[in-house]
Amino acid sequence: MFDTWVLRRPAFFILPSLVIIVALLMSASSPALSLLSLPQILTKLKTFLPVSYFNTTTTAPISTLITTSSVSPPPTTTTSQPPKMPKAPVYFFSHGGPDVQYNTTHPVYPILQSIGKEITQKVKPSAVVVFSAHWQPENVGPDEIHVNNAEKTDLIYDFYGFPPHFYKATFPSTGSPSLASHILSLLSASGIRAKGLPRGLDHGVFSGFNVAFPPTSNPLTVPLVQVSLFNSEDPLSHFRLGEAVRSLREQNIVIICTGMTVHNLRDMRIAFGKPHPMPYAVSFDNALKEAVEQPDPEKRKEEMVKVLKRPDARQAHPWMDHLMPLYIAAGAAGEDKGKQTWTLHEASFAWAQYRFGELPEEK
Image 1 (cartoon, rainbow, N blue to C red):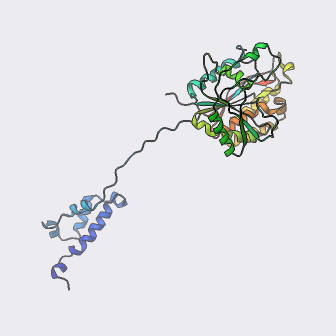
Image 2: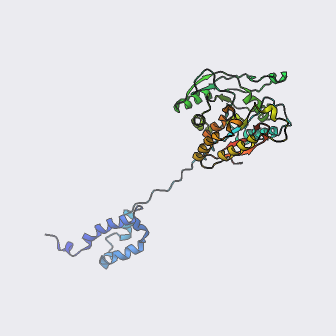
Image 3: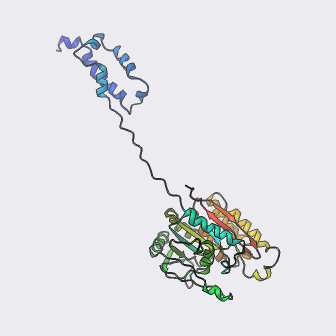
């Protein structure tokens, strides 16, 4: 049935199969490629084919068949990814009273100046969002937040009994209606009821900011938007508020929360002038530091809530408005660690300053 020439030529049957097998072995995806080299494959093929086949001049050499049948691997390409911008740090300022901007000999004065330069010269933010202890919306429920959406912002002199020049203080700033609108969107997406309205900056902002960002030597030249606290003492609500605006940091927007780590105005008159601070000013501030500096964020949250149940908590804060901004800062920090950068125990107050997150690397 078959021609006798065909029957005498086993290579006629074997060769096509071998070519296919060799092509598969030499493909880039075959693990056998790492096991046999081309000469080794040729040597093994000679054991299957007659010697005369390799000496023939009418048939292409097997090496040529292998070369033409193999598939070259695609060229390796490396896609360079742009470096990811680090998240802006979060700060907590113990801001003091409206006299802080005039009391240049107070120990906190150079500390706030140094933090301000750190922000403007190292972080170089695109904007600043501030939460102050002195803005808890009135005549609303405990679950509503307000956002200052004015472009031009006046000051609110929310204090009494100070010298006349205190009520002439200024702080130049420019708001950002677009940033305020973005913050409102973030709050809404987190299920937080919020509305925008124009409002002046209270002394929890402008007094400390006049020290950190003096207009003549270290001006704050980026948009500034203030956001209220909840009208409550609920630490978990304020954690959630910080979490809601956390993504602002990815746009190099610095979040600054201002208050005091110990704030008892009722004891101020009897405590000032004494050689030692009130005992609770020391004990509570130290306990708060230990809680905030917990390396695990969930443990930090747990410990910061527990600290409010200490016996000295109500002595340190008869009302928790000056402490709630620190819980916003911790919520905005996410996985980033908190660090107390400085503190002072004075009379019935504590002046701890905190930073969450790392500073950008110097180029």
